[in-house]
Length: 316
Image 1 (cartoon, rainbow, N blue to C red):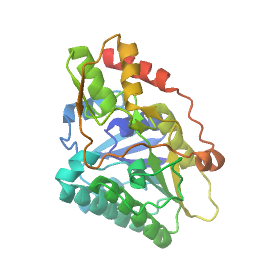
Image 2 (image 1 turned 60 degrees about the vertical axis):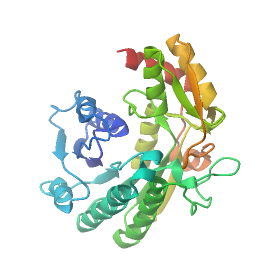
Image 3 (image 1 turned 135 degrees about the horizontal axis):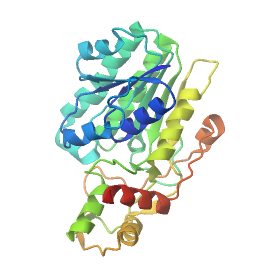
């Protein structure tokens, strides 16, 4: 099987590429190494597979259709897993045009190329952010998602809708996976667990927004990768369009997350409190009953286990 992974040098993408290679698949990784954070980190993410004969790195940008076409130039791609995106809620408030250009137009460019190629399945990385400020209970795929509170969330929802449209045209299985706060080794340095760990070891203050009771459904990277593989294997005779939540279906408060980091690092946090920021949601929690029923998705890592694995990686 030949798989194109866009954004394959990133946190989730590099883990996915490694797993695909380990299972004997041929992988084409498209990444532009955009300096949202140090490009050297992304290159290091690929260090274990960069020389593997089944791994092909294409440096290019999904905003450039010619770069996308290079991925399809010599080989028939079977499956496209589209992870490439501008990430982050707060940065999207500062530069919404860039987020729209990459996440919306870039996705359209990719879908247009896929329409001309004989791919067998398209998988989009979406986000729990599409649910907005959900008012209660677990987030279900059937919930109203027409009230995004950040440009990032809006572009992720537009990606889902573009996939729906192209599924009708291409008549191939299209799956949108809504990720819930993925963490673990190689997590982006701007994300809370990674950033707070660095500050703990440096003895510097940790800034939290609000009273510390905001909560997230943290999902360990291996469980997320397992979910992606379940989506790859998912058989749908109707060749339809599906959305699946990939989360742990448990919530951890911000103050609980910091407490777990303190235990794992044996360090005491210095807390600096600031008001809630625009675009931040109060909590996230995935209803994964559909993913369990149709995909057989069952996350196995507790938050405590995941944090300890992350700290072990961080310490090297």
